[in-house]
Amino acid sequence: MDCPICKNAMITLELADVEIDHCTDCGGIWLDAGELELLLGDAEQAKKLLDSFKIDSKCTEKRRKCPICLKKMQKIIVGPSTPTLLIDKCRRGDGLWLDKGELQDILNRAQLDKDNKIQKLLADMFGTEQGN
Ligand SMILES: [Zn+2]
Ligand SMILES: [Zn+2]
Image (cartoon, rainbow, N blue to C red; front, side):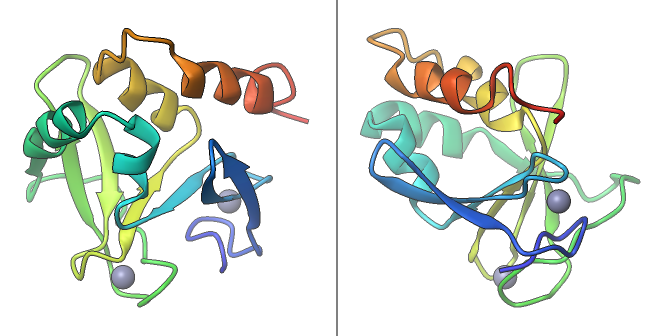
């Protein structure tokens, strides 16, 4: 699968038994449908977060193409907290595109207060090595 931004092939990473696609150039992450829920682990928190997604039809940010169906994705506001977090979502539901740092941001907003396993994994995986 190619990165929607750099067009380079992404690598597959395993994060808490969930396979995610990661672009080592721009640091973006592609999550197939259902993978965000798996990463969140908690079905109730996941539902709350997904229910907070709002389509931003007026967004002027450049629209990216879905790496699977190659159609332009929708901008989604992950609400309601500020500052506004915008992510890209395939209209057909193939999955979500997250720019560098946005997965961490989403997990922060989901208020996973239990053990933060994913947060730690992300920090280990991307924390200090990003930008090389
Ligand atoms: Zn990229
Ligand atoms: Zn798609």
